[in-house]
Image (cartoon, rainbow over all chains, first blue to last red):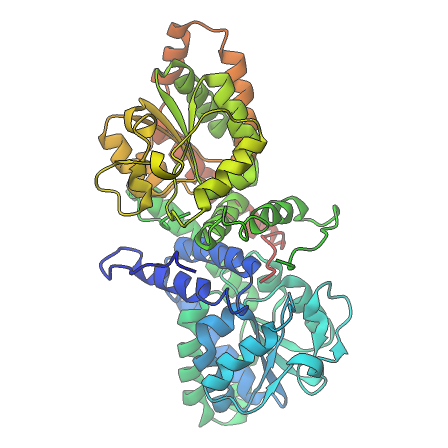
Length: 266
Length: 266
């Protein structure tokens, strides 16, 4: 694609535009789907309303998520196109710190897409990667997309699944299977956000480094302490905090009456 | 692209998914840009928070917009990729009813893109189309994208410009040139929304048919009456109404605690 151009670092929305370009650059190779771009746009709008920062409540969810990954017996990090394009390095590092497996799981399993994603993760040094090609041979019931195809060594038998940028169907199905589901979702009203065990309402680009450093910090702690961190976590409260933050910020923005919103560039 | 599939009409987000597919289908031919898909996602999120309906306040802005187009001496409807993919027929009809010219104006003027858009509009029966190829030979100052390239017979000399799904830069430049700018923008906080003379905070797919029927209805009315409609219009009020609607709806949704938000399908 030639539609990307240099962004001036002084541009008020430079960071947001750079993230966009990391995604659009990955469309040609098949890593990012067109629906993935639209989904990213939805996230941008919610992030903007949330204030484009990690709220104290999201930081709390990140702590609980790190604890849950560390105490899990068979944790799996699920990888889709957008996350691979934005956070391959961080995914590989998080898997290393927590002992979780990485599994490619896609809504649209177009030909060659999983191997394009595999290449990104291999470049970041991943050793074992589940869910590629024929390896996604098991099925999850009641999921109406290619998301249902999982690896029998991974998501199928996992006790805890980390599902950044997820769809609601699969979150619901994984929960029904009794798994702990950790979601990253900027929309606190989505089915994913509402149904996950731990919802990190934050931009995945901001959340991943924090999740890694929390996992490193908590790794030295005893299992009882981690369990306390996880069992005291209240997801409903985190979601209602996020909604209150959005409401308050809308009120503040409308009071200020300034135009600092997401910049359109059709 | 093969990622589009049949959507069950019973799906709670069927209409939203169909609109998405109308856009993604137009990427291959070059009508819709990748940045256009992300922009659409942002709109989806704001539309969802607004309640996915035309508010009384948006209906008021649509009435004023119809009046402004009818009293204009040289009205122009600006066409970009997303609008062409979603509303070609309506654009041609609106131009017919109001006597406005149609002009292609693009943020990313990639090779062949304007002629792909031209084909869509020709298929809907457009006779005169400005801004295609070398015809976009004039320049608007202080616009940092291909948006600056305009047709000397169209936007350059227009008194009123209809700019659905716009970027802030150009809206500001057109206003500085003394033109009446009518925008359609789901984000009431955007620069476009804040700087336009009349901002229709509504989904362009819902707004266009209403704008056409208002223009037909008002066409029989006297010029003084139309001028009254336009001059009594208060855009700041319309924007603050939209923000209040968003706040109220967030409060309502968080109270209900239901997961009916935009469905992710990465």
